[in-house]
Image 1 (cartoon, rainbow, N blue to C red):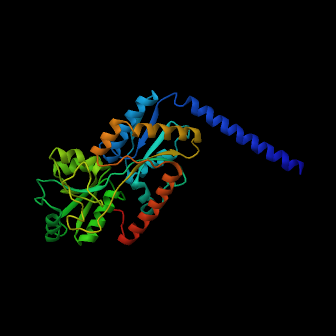
Image 2: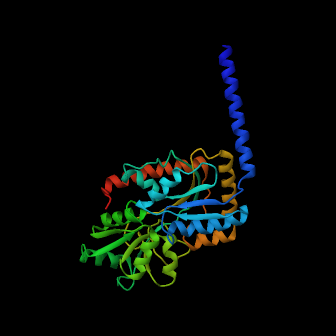
Image 3: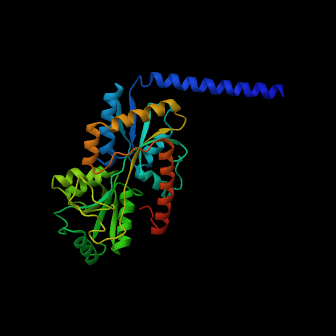
Length: 326
């Protein structure tokens, strides 16, 4: 009995010391630069939200917030690297909907997306959009594009941010719903896919609005429809897929900030506070609206629950669509 009491006292003491240590770390955090690992090439949708957010946090925290682009394998290379980073509050991971898809497509991942990360906060959730190169595709509406694709089976290619990304699955879902045959060309991120789309090397991409909004406004690309239940305020004249005649085509992506597991809870809580502050600034609100996203407020356990539901949702889609890696 005595030993049990002593053991309980020791555990209580250790827990108290852990809380005090975590609080002390948070009070001095940050005292050096912070790194955001972005698992795609520069210029893509993840970058479109990560860089403005890093710049705003830079100002708030008084310390540099650096972006480290580590592309490859549908975002899983960067995720693997981030999962093994020191849990000291100086490395965070900008994950995306792609990472909720990866467990269903990559059976040998060396990390567990739900267990090896702490879900900090949902950052953005722009919808997907069907965009074409106007010099390569004459279609001005989604219906015209579908008719063209049906009349030319196997002759069209579509680019994506990589095998297993939302861009890839958005393309496969489009093929299923329209009964068309368009070949998949994976890239190492949305940035390179956009570059090749603008250059005319691929005629169409099923992209996140975050990375295609700029080229669409500049007239380099033509948007045919947004894969969302309602129109996007930033592009009020762009019809939804349902309005354009393709019912059931709804695909959105999302981006969120994660920390390696065992990162001190007090530091995670402090980052949540800083994120909420950043997301209410005019600069972030304007950038998010410009890129077709709302400003979400989903953090901690609520965000973790959303991630788990997304993993399950995409598992069903991958199975039903019989998606295979190229």
